[in-house]
Image (cartoon, rainbow, N blue to C red; front, side, top):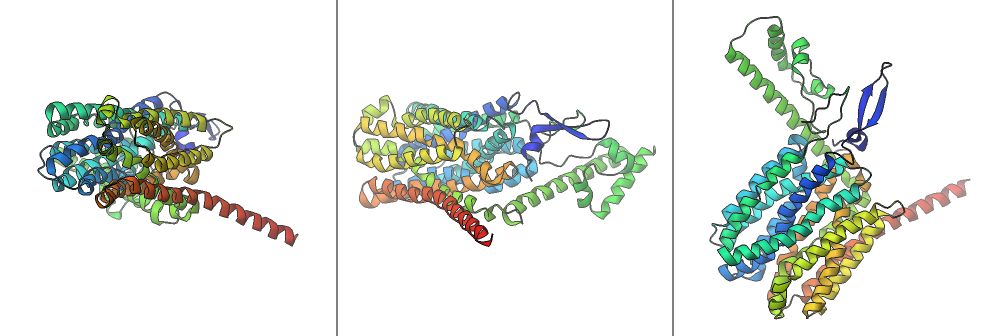
Length: 510
């Protein structure tokens, strides 16, 4: 499936005695690794930052289409939710095509979704152009950006993930300002068209995600992803028609003997017409792609449904339950705060310094600070993660009690800083399942977060349509979030009690 730390972190060399020694890979924790962090940083700006700024467009859609708050909120939540929900399926693309091409294709699809949304005539059309198209493209670009940082770092992984995911905070601040300016100057339709052009930079970010492959005898296949099966060289094919890897040998159909015979005849000096050679190359390419797709699907399937299924890990299942409720408490303020500010008659103060920008700025400091603290040798990543979660859920409960700009600003600052724990999610996930299952496991986690993001904002809008208040939506989301946090605490306690009981039983036998 996915390569382990040992696979991506060291190069193998054969000494004269045919013993393999290990030496550190120069790009681990340095070198091109920081370019990958930079690419991931801009992916977070263009995807997550833009989605956190959708509250600006939500207000414009309410005024233009005159639909209910609950229905209009589905556009934003569908885009954010689908970005995360498709995570497990994007793992199949990563297995087959690699992170680089997955990100490039996702960037093209995301840009197309923004451009098409500029020409929609109803909220229902936005469901497909912006919610589905742009959301699916965002999901294809987002997961590879997280996975690639995890592959390039070992010692400073939490800090690297923190630095890359600060793009969400920077992006929220920048995109909120940009969208407000574009909407006021050119209207929301032209604003979305311009943003679609800006989103094409996701393709540039994908091009920077150079795969990190193990090298043997000084030969580094830098153009391949570590999980991609290495294609046979021309020399090896000509010499005997044998494939370079054992896995390809096992997967080769019997009818490929004709192909090997053709190549052997070519090696013997027989001249073939150019047309036959082109057909031979096409057949060879199709065979390699077929093997690649089969292997990618097999690895993806075994990670979810095979003997190595991630769902056999009880602590990981509890982590999924937490993720189902966590993300909505972070998303709801971004989508509905602009409307809440209007209800409280705080528009003038909010225009000077938007509350969502306060969350974004403190979110940046939170991610870097929590990532730095979590990397300290005397600090447990799990403890930092849980403390930040408790702080965030407390802020959600307090938010409805604040009706002044100063009070809302203070709570938004606390929400922004404590939500910095999102940078620790890949590290916590890797601690639970290992680096070889990180992409599949993190795909499941962000899928659960996607369900939370998909249902949270429409739920809050629906509660407002019934009660004419947002207070109850925050209380209910905070309560569900608290249950998710306690699920993370119950499982370790159960495991500890089981170990104590086994120890007592062993002592009684002695």
